Image 1 (tube, rainbow, N blue to C red):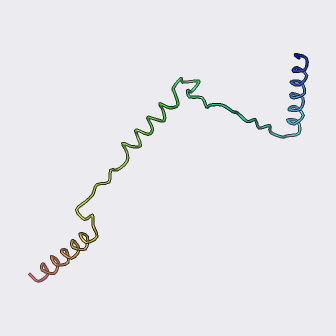
Image 2: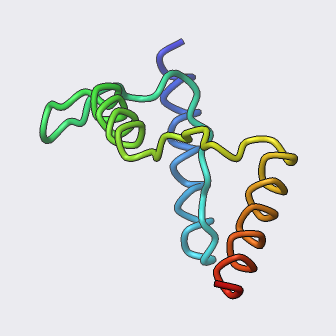
Image 3: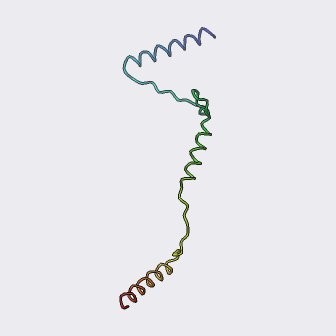
Length: 91
């Protein structure tokens, strides 16, 4: 059994070497979960993402509802502004 596994491993290495000689790139599929911590710094990836999310929420501009929320309020404000301008020009 061990001899058979070694033979298969040797054939795989020879095949990869032959492909590498021809200029092809071998792409391997990696299954499993992604690493949750950076190996060099030891910082967990989730905490870094959480910090970024918090910064973005703090930077977001909060939408405030002004006095002219409805369409009729905007039209009334424009009409009142025009009336004030016309009265100011007469005086």
